[in-house]
Length: 353
Ligand SMILES: NC(=O)c1ccc[n+]([C@@H]2O[C@H](COP(=O)([O-])OP(=O)(O)OC[C@H]3O[C@@H](n4cnc5c(N)ncnc54)[C@H](OP(=O)(O)O)[C@@H]3O)[C@@H](O)[C@H]2O)c1
Image 1 (cartoon, rainbow, N blue to C red):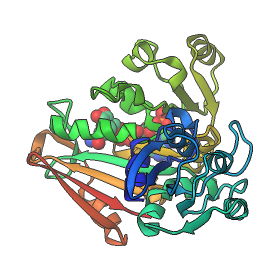
Image 2: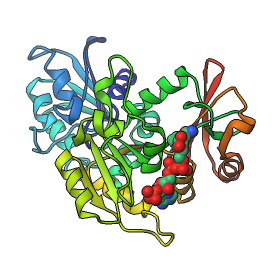
Image 3: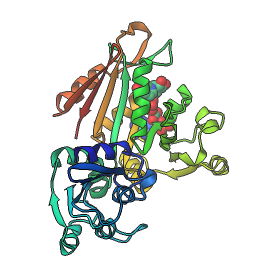
Image 4: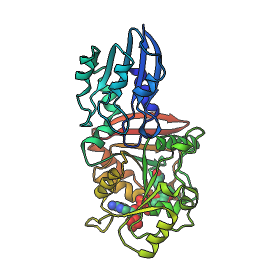
């Protein structure tokens, strides 16, 4: 089951609303097949793993991280394929919260004389599916916020574009690839002119779509993100309607949605996330400056917080100090902390909720 989880981790954030599932098949104690859910969610992991084995195998066992599906959706049910390939024993770790499948597979598998075991590695795998459970059981997607700060807590270096080193920044690219959507602000896009892509060899195609919060439609078509990224991957959330600008966006192939304001006159972040979920995004990576990040954190909308800390103090060339806010914010949180060293820099990950 540990190997099945490793398979699932490979495709996290790239399954288009479907869960990232890993599957391993063994025979006489040896692994004979391993697979995960396909890019964009189909075919499922079990079907991919079963494809690799011959028919009528004796003593075969199938290990899968999530309960196999038992309904006809866009693909036939996985249990049908499991029965067809005459698997003898099925081990799955957690039940699928999708009501079309929840607790339905065991009965059919047992009817076909297949042994079923539920719960292996359950604790670890439940943690892995936190974002999927949230997506299925609530109106909200899972939000990971990333902050890059100097040793003295500044978020902006007035003299240089970057706060952290190349290793930390690559790690951010990797994190992007494990999410299905980035959220940022028009302020960050206008000030920094970034691309927000996954620029690591081998995962460039895993750059997630981006939602830009642009209340007054301030973005210009001359910005890198508009010029260089696939327009179908750019989504604008605005409030102040401007027909001319909306038509320009439409002509560029960019979609735009109106979001209501909160009492402070900003976009309502709960409505932002609800809309993101309706657009099928389940794992959001938030990359913004101090104002938007603080708003998300204050409203308790962040599930994981990743703080990259450089080894330099910026002192007078630093701007937007988030130190006192973070100390207060983290004090009341029962966060589980993981630390990673990145060549003199530090990544501290807080599992907030
Ligand atoms: N160190 C880091 O990790 C990091 C990461 C990203 C950016 N940055 C830096 O941060 C700078 C920008 O920081 P910033 O604080 O000015 O901008 P920001 O936090 O990126 O964005 C603030 C803007 O977000 C929009 N927004 C929409 N809904 C909001 C809400 N509910 N609450 C608050 N804001 C909302 C507002 O723009 P509208 O009025 O258009 O709605 C607001 O002005 C950039 O220049 C960049 O260099 C640092």
